[in-house]
Image (cartoon, rainbow, N blue to C red):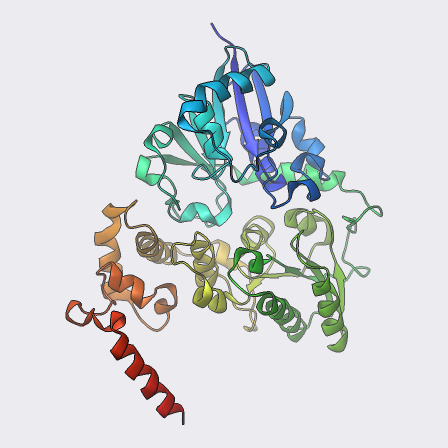
Length: 457
């Protein structure tokens, strides 16, 4: 009987921690070997630390029999841009088996973001290997963003995910009948606790206080940056202003000690602007630099409030740590995010629906136990949004989307839809069929612009 080798793929410490938690919870069948394949998907991998070099990784590594590098395996190709040509698959499988000393092992795969490389490439190399997918945060509640080759999709057995929004059902990969399975929160918190214990105190750029807050026993407000300009959602100036709004909003709520966790590749200049703004408002801001997980920061500095736009960390803060959270800028992002099928649309929709705005005075964390009615409403909304995003992948959702739109379109829910998109899909809320020529008619558009200009005068 051939030896069984289970290969787990991870590109972030958060993803590796999720895998470790799933292993601790006994969610995988026994295997003769368990190998962790790390991949660095940064635009310039040579200048960005790989997951196996960041603080805390050693505690996660203990669950595996070995660590491999996908970047080294396919060099000089980039992990996000390379996939095997159909005719080269047998050659690549022989090469990888030889390089990784797999022999004739029976292979099992567990990957993230299976619809894109490098996960897709790995599944193509090992043709026929059964596949499990683990979810990348809130995106699991939305549709699969690209149509997956049935030769890959039909091999997927489970979608492992954290219960970030209790009661909410993932839509990802349901077109293949993939069943969702929860990774226990207790196991995930245990792994995060191990990672937090290994963070160096007083040394290196990832320095975090061991207990209490940034200043003595003062619990700071923690502000989370996402670097949305790199995704093309906001301009650099707009994202900088978004961060400044976080500072102003937190100070307005009475916080005088702030900590900002920037995205690892965000420009250093943002730090100075934020510190200057905090100082002007009578507060002090500390930068948390380095590749520190937000969840590690939650444990080490015990923030009184966590502020962000639509980061998954907002939901782990409220749901797993009971920390008050607030959102800022979701209205701007919803208006700017393009194309409509951008997979970030679902996380920002969930944040806008469930989390309190930073401008509200009563910022609480009790959203993590929403009533059943609220979850059902959100499920219906995400079904409509998911169909509008990917109608060709989920044609069976049309009836549910039509029902929701015909009954629930109002000034509040319109922010989640675009009239042009609804029109192109012949959904309620779109332009009536007899008037559908109007948006495409150059003369009508010119007259509309002229009328608009006259009204402004």
